[in-house]
Length: 457
Image (cartoon, rainbow, N blue to C red; front, side, top):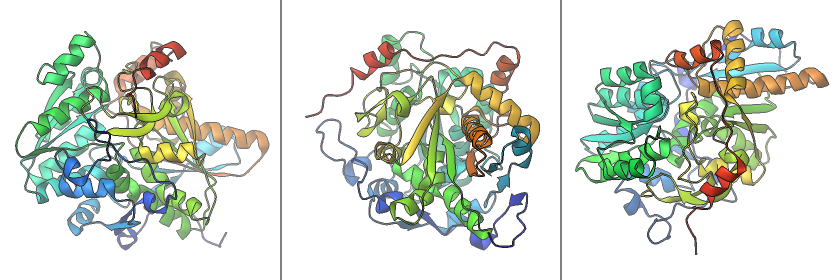
């Protein structure tokens, strides 16, 4: 390592902020399987996707050849309000654990939305405005994506309609009010306001909902109302593309101080933050330039990578979206109402699914009491109250650091701290009162759901 004094927080200069997003698919020899038209099972075309998404976003979704896509200046100008975000050395956590490992975290909660979601929200709102649309529709789990999108739509003077998973709508009323403050219309999902919502409620009376349900409702509204398109906060290739600013900044910060990570960790629901964090590093691995260990951390209640099946499945519970080949628990699977609402999705990004299938990405799962225990430790020593989603990555980093303690290895661990948990205090209250419950689906439950996967020719 060069003789450079490494600061507690590594900040980049404005001119070191990425000028282009990185498209990992361009460096993948085995590309993720294409999205399929649900009716014909033929690869989805730009024209087909453009009926649901903004045209330029549909083009980004299908682009597997361009390694870098320029970030429009208007988006970069917005990024400058809160980017570059800091890469922080977790000295206090290291001391608490008594580990020889060096731990760093990329903190994405330093904006009003409280999470990394704003990186893609502002991009998608920009393209919607550029296309001359009236507004956009979306779903949200914990509310971080809905908050970010409502901010972005307010900035571009777009109408924003959010279908919020019912359990989170009830657990996180203040997140809902932030969205409404920014002008969004927020509906608990599943609802009686859409045909697909009515069908889901008929099939699952009293359901607490899921991201798959909310996606179906948001898509139905978008395709049935002139001047609207649907936008998504995770899973899609375009979202991982926009979130690559996280990994690109992390890569630049580490190189600035000659730091080489050994292990890179992120929480995983649909894959947006994890994909964004690891993409530039995974590109190095695929090009034969470096070697890293990547770990996806998911909830034991919704274990798509660790217990799911790699197969074509619907992206939504209502089965109206394109089919994607991904690690999935089945689009009919409705996860237990844990407090990491942003990770309650039945499938995983096609990019991350392919990396996992190739053995490049490892995956682990933890119960929510374990995750909140890690969150509490982190909050007490590092001074940030993490979101339950982010706390999965914290748990993963702690486990790896303790292994280093056992072996005496001085590995460098980097993880994504994707957001703050100040709207998740109901979950913290249950944890503090000893009322937080763990739920792990049985093999029989998963088998029943997976048996309903679409039949492919």
